[in-house]
Picture 1 (cartoon, rainbow, N blue to C red):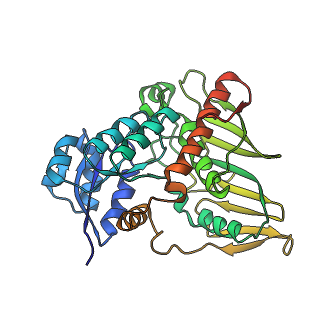
Picture 2 (spheres, rainbow, N blue to C red):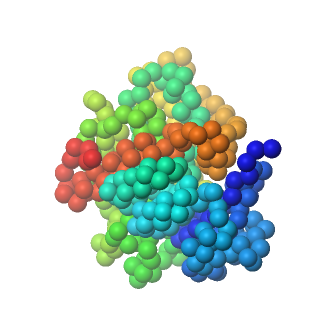
Length: 356
């Protein structure tokens, strides 16, 4: 039997942590040895779901590290604090899987990369969208040449909003004062652009095989009383063609419950066809010269080691390999360049060359 990897989940600001710990709990070669958040109420669901004991629950992150001694740490802090938490883990000698986005800005992203490089530790960045079967299937079809050479990517994504009470069906949207009090709407790392453009930029960079856009133009929308946007539209020039990325807080529905209109997902346009692939759907639509009317193709089934981010991350560590694709530092840095340029473009009201 191989190594049993010890994992701790630290900082539950972003509740994707529950999903990541569930993956860890399901892996036979992974043991959850501790969870930590300053507010213990935030830990209750994960403690119950992962069968954790009282002595594995912490409110002091350093005590969690010192006493549980994990090999790996999953982090889900507020965006503005990503660099701080990764630097803390690097100082403690821990490999890190951090939940999206990469960072609040490119400078913080580079701090994260540098501290982990100096400590000779692994850093992986998880984007849930990267595991959706329609988007993985589209990547395979693209690489098989089913639509020829890629020319354009068109992306739309969002949800009802980050602080909507989802326990109430069709509930009333939160008011302006509720939004102003929450870190999701904080000027340093909040807004629909920061929340969702990264998804599109990371997967687009994966589809483009690391190609950089030359120029970015972004406009933002939303209630002007807020410090952040609730909508953004970004155009990115790749060669002679324009790709588009739209983000929205305030869709009528959440796409995981009822697909939005426009649909959340992607359309890839190549020299010889198109692929439409949308979140949570069981098929992708492929149209090409052989089938211009389009065909629905069943999505691929996930297979080891790419069933979930924890499985893949551990697989890479066991083999001494750096994560590839949407979890890699290289892909995420390019995506961060796109996001930072989009933020600056919206601020200045003009198209800009890619930053960084």
